[in-house]
Image (cartoon, rainbow, N blue to C red; front, side):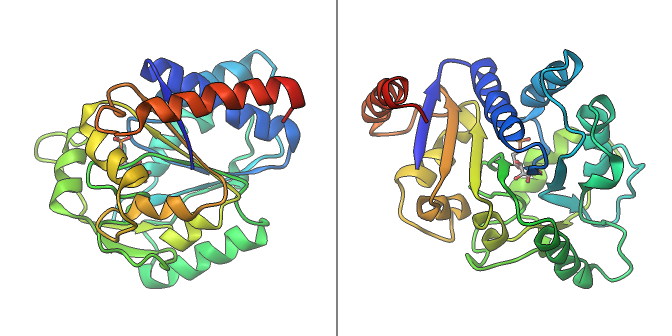
Length: 263
Ligand code: F6R
């Protein structure tokens, strides 16, 4: 696992946007895995800027989002489809038919999981998956005790996740308690996983992810097994790590190596 600790959320977003750019520049028909929530917002702003200035095109890119609430239509302002349109897709040159999000209104939500998996497979799998992390260590909506071998399916959200996400819902608005989410195994099959986290509220989950035992209590800890996982965090999110100096030294030495021998 590559651990990159940066000073601010701004720097986290800059590096994340650079990784996405590099992926798409290397392969114009890349398949990207997208996340919603507060964390990737700045990254998406930077991606939009790159697209507007013509340095990055999404014309051939395909995307798959991690998750969607069950019961919310694409037009519902709290749906993840709406979020993605508002915060990214409507502002870049991606083809609408190339953007995929689980169908929260699927007639049979249980069938939606395997159908979504089949689409990912048909697209050739995910090249780069962006992830946020819940304060309880969830990735996608794979809550603590999710099976490490899980695939896209319906999940019941924990109280902790419902509380964390309440901020996106207006008073009196119904907050769904079920979601369709890519599974942990689905995420693990992405060729490169980039997990982003900012703020002290994520510090415990980040410590468990990077330095804790592999445990279903912290689903993100499975990333310790990923061949190419990059964790990019700000100082606050890194505040509970024990080996901070080591991660910083590894990064410095990695940069020196890259400067000499290329990537
Ligand atoms: C969103 C998702 C979630 C969020 C996580 C962090 O698509 O899958 O795992 O990444 O809940 O959310 P924020 O970024 O709002 O703290």
